[in-house]
Amino acid sequence: MVSFAQWLPWGARQIVRTRVATLLLLCLLTVGWQRGSAQTSSVPPEPPPQQKFAVAVAQTQAELLHQTLTATLSVIHRSYFKGGETLPVPSRALEGVFYRLKRNTQVEARWMAVNTPAMSLEHQPRNAFDKRAAAALSRGQRTFVQVDQRYLRRAGAITLFSSCLKCHSPAAPGKKRNPVAALVISVPLSEFRREPAQR
Image (cartoon, rainbow, N blue to C red; front, side):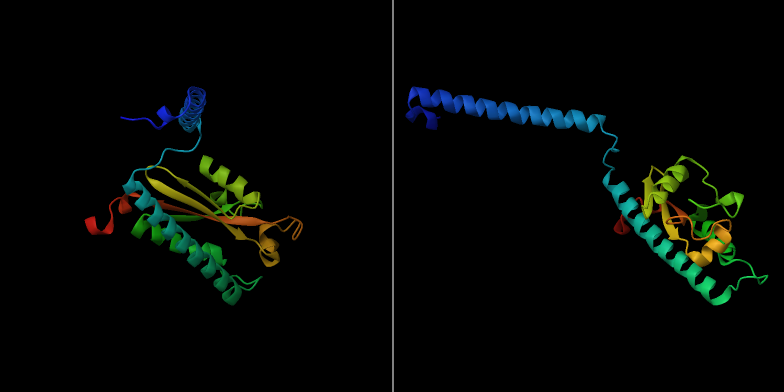
């Protein structure tokens, strides 16, 4: 095989070889550095294709469910709940929907206090995910998502307006900056492990 460098003068050949060797060394160092940093990074490893599909479907389902339930809460609150009456609070009425949802689909939904007092002991952050989600939502993040082998968990912020703060923060309504609660939705991934054509 004939090298293009054979037509160059000897000094120019040395310069070309040095530059090519330097470039090759830089490429190898960059690849090695990226591999090393990828191994020490806190980013989870790339999930297998079946897991990616399951996560995408579960994420879409959780987002749609969040929008549906928060819109329902808002409409019920505005249309049917009048302060001072002995009717159940709309969020409490929706807990019946959450119960049926879990029983029929294994999708769990529940309210969670974020940066205002919990209206029920059941609404306090329960585990490490809840605590991380509450901290993120308190800082202004609108959603917090975690995926593990079995579930996609999504905590979505619900803005508490002044009418909400009459109950959620009666001691100082309007004083808290960006008061939010959360709707936590857990979607099992086992249902979506295979692509639709394989089901």
